[in-house]
Image 1: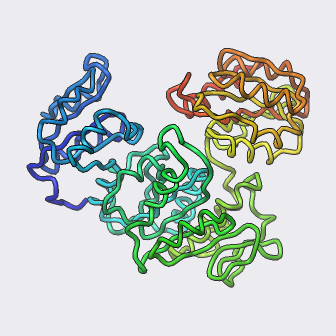
Image 2: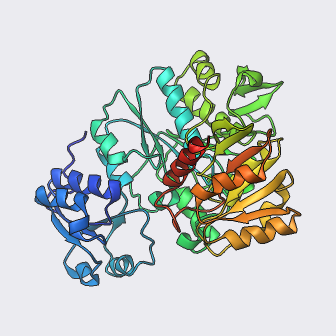
Image 3: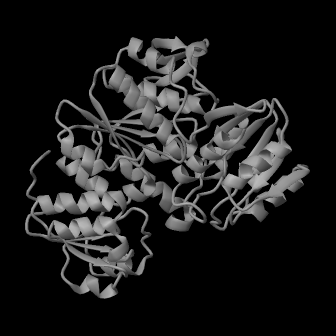
Length: 450
């Protein structure tokens, strides 16, 4: 860890806790800052805040008092989930107080270079693949970010011998200042998180931040099958490394003659890859590019792709019960992700879907419902999804209270040989704290079946 002096004796507000806020507050305290923490959860119900209080950090809990912004803070470290139209943030912006997210701190203290991954879909699978390839190639990687491990915790342990592989959301990327990855990956761009960003242009601008500080000494791996990604990449000063599932590209990753290639080198045959779903080909190609740029040999890449079957909550096979195969795709928090999950199967599907209502309709899902024989809905968007399914000709539709009750309902609607797929097409926050919690409840419900 770099012992930076940037924050010594500076008055800093950490707004919102969760794991990243706790880590940021402790780190800043360690770096000599005067830290105040503000979180909505009352102190009596907030063990994280209690722990920070014991460290000597000022803690204000139970409300977000707007007058805090008048107490001379020189920096705010914001929980990524707090939107910029929050009154506290709006007041801070009016006063010209800089706002960052915890990943910026992680970068500033890290002795290790970063490989950073963002995009609308495929981030977690790509991050995991890159990490596994680097580990198999003996590059001593560490994994961090939106994948579940707090970046600043990981960065404190990183040395120059490591590489930090980090998954980044648009929320996190809006709060960077000097963050500059050695390798950045932009998997794809689709409509998402408009309730947070307000419009598609601002969402894409947030994603573009992953490369805003890169120079010609760094690399940006981009999906050249998408025009909007190509346009965004034109802003970058980094070396552009393309990947494509549809055409052969110069100086990048592509498919030719039934094999994965990087530049002019054949890496491995497609038939030796075990990760299911055509949508994962983008993730595979971008991961191969990152691994090769990092000096990983083909044997290591082959070992990973010949054994890697996916990550939890991402089209994860759970079990076969009564002749039905159950898959957990709780990470599918938008229409595109669910569309790609449905396209991965040829068998009849009983789809479990629903969740947080962000104001959008689900008509874009309709072309992918052809093999869906039945639908089980839950959450705020149940009615919207039911309308589209009914228009698509699906006759068997049941609404239940939650994911746990959806599993036995799916058994009733399905037959041996069918796939039962949890792929909600929505965020989980109307009923569950995270998509991981939602997926774990589904897994438990499946295993409870006799």
